[in-house]
Image 1 (spheres, rainbow, N blue to C red):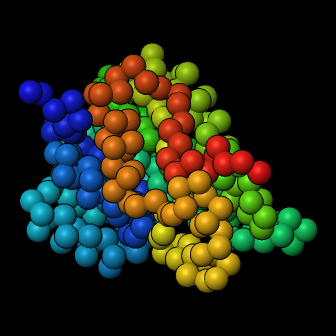
Image 2 (image 1 turned 120 degrees about the vertical axis):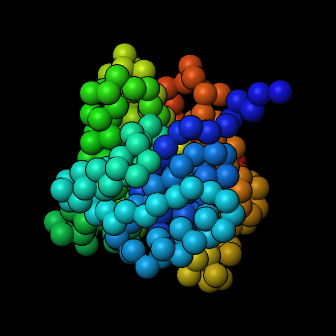
Length: 255
C-alpha cells in the first residue's frame, strides 16, 4: 500500500530548528523521507540536531539563518540548493515572545516580536516561493502560528497579534500561490512544553492553568506529527489556506 504521507524525494527547510517544535519537526520530516535543511541562529545546537538525524538514518544539513535578515535568508537557500536542490517544503517556525502588559509595550519590544514572528515568516516564505515559481515547481508552505493567533492571553498582546497576522497572511498567500501549485497552510499549536514556556508550566500557577484545558494536560510533541505530515505531503493535495488547530480542546472550553 502506498504511504500517502511519504516525503521521499522532497527537500524541506525548517526555521527555528535549534530547539523545541522546530527541532522536532525536522526529525519528523526526515523520518518521513525528506532531505531536511535545519535553519536557526544558534549553530552549535543545529550541529547537535544534525548528528541526531544523521544517526537515525536521515539526510540533513544545517544553515545559519536570521529570519530578520534577507541576505541571510538568501544565503541559506543558496547553500541548500547547492547540496540538496530546490527546497519544496518550507516550514516557517521561528518565533519569539516578549511578554509585557499592553501599556508597557514600547517600539523596540513590538518590533522584536513582529520582525521575527510576522516579517520573518513573510521573508522566508517569499524567498522560497520565488524560487519555486521561477522553476515552475510545486511546493508547500507551512506557517506555524499559535492558539493565541485565534484566542488571547494577558501580557501577550504582541505575540498574539503577530500570530493572528500569520493566520491571515496564510490565507492571502494561499489565494495567490495556488495558481503556481504552491499550497500554504498553518498549524496553530496549543500548549506544548518547550524551552520558551517550560519555566511557567513548572510553577504552581502554570500547573493550575493546565487544569483549565479540557484535556487537562499539555500536548506531547508527537501529537503534532500527524498534522505536520498531512500538510507537508500529497495527502493534503486539495487543502490550502487553512489553519489546523492542535490544542487539546482549548478553543472549545467553557467559561
